[in-house]
Amino acid sequence: MSATTSSCATWTIPTKDVLFITLRDGYGFMQVVISGKLAKTYEALTLTRETSMEILGEMRQVPAGARAPLNRELHADFYKIPDHWRAAGGDDAITNRVTADTDRSTLLNLRHLTLRGENASSVLLVRDAVEYAFAQAFRELRIRKVSPPALVQTQVEGGATLFQLGYYGAEAYLTQSSQLYLETCLPSMGDVYCIEKSFRAEKSLTRRHLSEFTHVEAELDFISFDDLLSNIEHMMCRVLEIVMADPAIAGYIKTLNPDFKLPERPFMRMKYADAIDWLREHDIPNEEGQPHTFGDDIAEAAERRMTDEIKKPIFLTHFPAEIKAFYMQKDRDDPRVTESVDCLMPGVGEIVGGSMRIDDNDQLMAAFKREGLDPSNYYWYTDQRKYGSSPHGGWGLGLERFLAWLCNQHTVRDCCLYPRFMGRCAP
Image (tube, rainbow, N blue to C red):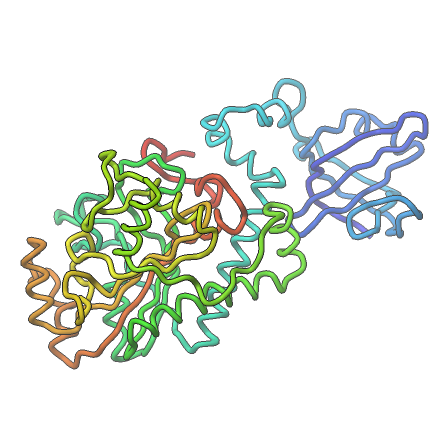
């Protein structure tokens, strides 16, 4: 049997003239045993971590009492290491460039090397499984995938977080969300979703903010607010069921997050007004250091502290209209608040945001006026109310935040391939 891959660990037992090598190819690990004269060659004696090899040998079950990945090992009869496959050694060895004590900034500069570590690669393998699971769970509900544009000329979540760029002499932006475009698909395609990049120019360096992130978004037609909450809960739990059904991926998650348990349903429901009362009762102040009052935009620290103390997923609902986006439907029983929701998870805070959308044209025009937006730029969006409106809503999930919660990572920066945030756009 032959194998070509990178060696990610080597060690020798000189008295037995045996060299043990652990190989990695992205699909697993394999222990290789090189013995006798083969272990005394120049290539074997100077082998460096991360060197690529081609090996021909016999696969055997490990002896009783011994341990190896998948309980088997490859006994080498022949191997070769061309010079250009050999990894750097000495001061340039990967173990000298990337260590447990290396500062965070250097690790990000060397992200291409840190990705070879077990923790980083495990998170990305879980990410791959989670994206696949979302696609499967959406398909089970007959929700169709679309691919909205990343270059836009309108805003969704406020002008302060737009990345502006020139576009053939015109002004354009990187999208903050695909929501408005998804809404235009409802009459012709039914319920739709996308998994695309979104961009927010927030000057924030918190552990849960990125300037470029992966956005899982869905828009659902002819639903109520309760239907929306049920869909979010179902999708999150179904994705976790699919992911944990894969023994390999479940193994990565258990290693990364030993205490992980599938969340219990139903998720806790808490209205914004009740959350304000809870924060006051527990002496958790707002950003000005004052007791929270109705109308405050609950800050990240207070939100996360509340979630961590309650220790369960929370649907925080019915936020005041003044602090939410222009397109959100007001509650018919209390027009001060919107039919909106944030899903909060312990350790991370907000992972999902969603709402019912305004489906009445007059109300939508009033919302544009309130926000100082020119509705003529949104004609393709407002026409949805002109040509057959319907009660609809949707949600958006930050994939990196979901992974930070699932994989017990301190920051969302460790949950994407090459993180982009304020001050970093390399490598």
